[in-house]
Length: 274
Figure 1 (cartoon, rainbow, N blue to C red):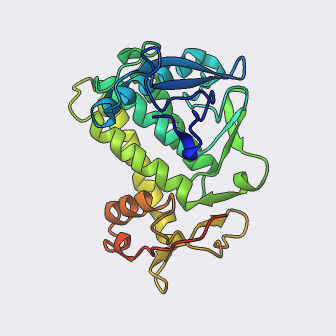
Figure 2: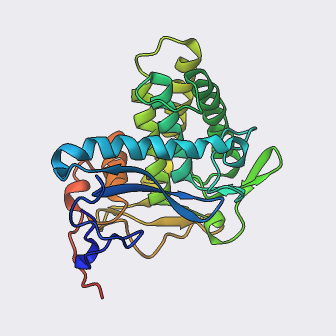
C-alpha cells in the first residue's frame, strides 16, 4: 500500500491508502517535464503485490516509453546519441550504452515502443555504432570515452572535468550494455544488423587497452579512471560490491580475461546513513 515511511500517507499525493477507497489502493505516477507535476496514470485495487507487481512493471515501462515521443529533443540526429536530458546538449558513455541496448531490444522485438519502430531502431543503431568508432578514435583515451558535448554535427570532449577524464564506471556501463545489445541482435539476419554487431564488437575490442591500463595488479582492482592530459590514474578504485561498478567489473574482467575473479574480490562495506 502507500503507507510511506509509516506515515499512513501516500508518498506522492499524501492521500490515505492503507485500505481500499473508491476501488483505489495504490497508484503509478509519472513525472510530466512540461508541467513539472506528477500525474497519476494507473491505480490498483489488488492488495496482493506479489501478483500485482508484474503488471505494475509493465505499466511503468509503458509510461516511460512516452519519453521517446520527444524525438529530436532527446536524440541527436547526426550521431544517433541520446542527450543527457531534453535541452542538455551533452551526454555520457552510460547513456549511450543504455540507449543502444534499448534500441537493440526494440530491433529484436523483445521490447515495443509506440514511438520507435523496429526499422527506426536499426537505423539509429547504425548511426550509434559508427559514431562510437569515430569518437573512440578522435576523442577517446586508450579506447575509453569521456563525456561528450555536441558541436553541430560533430562531438567534442565536454567542458569541465568529466570531459577531460575517462571513468571506469561510465565506460564499463557502456561496454556491458553493448555486449547485451550484440546478444539481443544475434538472431536477426538483416545485413545491416550484422554490420552493427561487427562495429560494436570492434569498439569493445579497442576498449581493452584502456581497461588493462586501469587495472591495478597490486590492489587487484580497477582504478576509478584516468586523466586524459597526463595519463594519471584516479586515487580511488572501483572496488566495492555495493557500488554502480560491480556489473561493469564482471563484464570487463570476463570479456578481456583481465582477472576472472575480480568480481569475487569486490569488498562489501556498510555505512550508517543519517
